[in-house]
Amino acid sequence: MAARRVTAALLDAPGAQRPGGQPSSRRAAAARMAGRRLLHAVPVVLAVSAGVFAAAAASPFDPLAGYLGDRYLTASQATQDEIAAQLGTDRPWPAQYLGWLGDLVTGDLGTSRSFGQPVAQVLAERLPWTLLLVAVALLAAVVLALVLGTWTAARRGGWVDRLVTPGCLLLQGLPPFVVALGGVAVFGVALSWLPVAGLTDAGAELTAGQVARHLVLPALVLALSQLPWLLLNVRQSLLRSLGEDHVAGARSRGLAERTVVLRHALPTALLPFATLLGARLPELVVGAVLVEEVFSWPGLAQAVVTSATELDFPLLAFLTVLTTVAVLVGSLVADVAYVLLDPRVAADG
Image 1 (tube, rainbow, N blue to C red):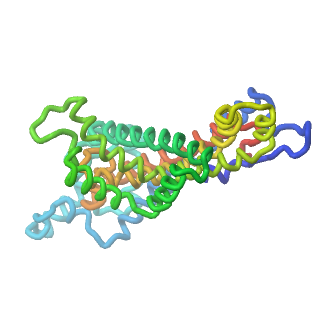
Image 2: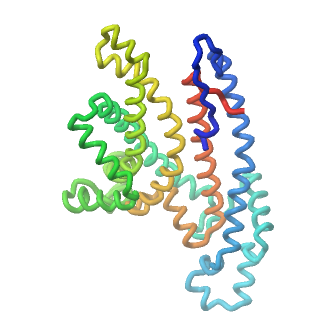
């Protein structure tokens, strides 16, 4: 969605006016675009959150059964009706949604039935671990993609290119949970180099060293699940950039090939990379859910699974809204960066 909303206007004629104009006007255009996107995001978030409640109402599962567990079979109908009235699950879904939305506006996120805690407390305990995992994985994927993508494009056909490019194509077809299970089998079971579950060893204190050691494998798996798209994008963009006229001109002036690649070809090749990073956010979130489940990482994504399996809709609805906002913001940041970095790109209207 992010890339489609950006209009690329290539300058074909010498002296043609650039769509973005001067840097100050490009910043103003990017700010206006950000304002429009934020306004458009409001109905999107409302529609997504309402869809969660509508889907819950259409579901054949009874939220009360998820709340009571085994007690659901032994509780009398009168008791079930009383608890349903207390929880508000006996009301039509539009009434439940409007009630949840009204509480949300006042800052009350509700109570998670599956965790037995306020939703705000569940978020406070789990969100930092998810942010840590996603940030480390994304940083590792970006660094590896830039280094290996540049290397394989600059030395196309070399042994590194022949090894990395087919490997990325193979990795691209593997779902994250398969990569995770492979990492557990190799580094956790066969080699016993890294722990495969939790934040710390059993009975150990929560220290930075323990967390770092337990973070390596899940972060590496999550990074590898995103690496093929990022690396192949950098490689392909750089190959196109190396064939452009301004790069040929740099070579004709006798500049070293390293300077030509890093200073003349790579900056142009990185422009689509900024948009791709925003577009990959939904896949990163989905990958985090699977990785946290495999490695028992106590993050927010694991709470999504728990809230869905136990029909904990107050928590599930807010997590869905939070994920939607994260994806929209990531897409917006990528588009704003694209407009600011490339004067040939005009902000959408």
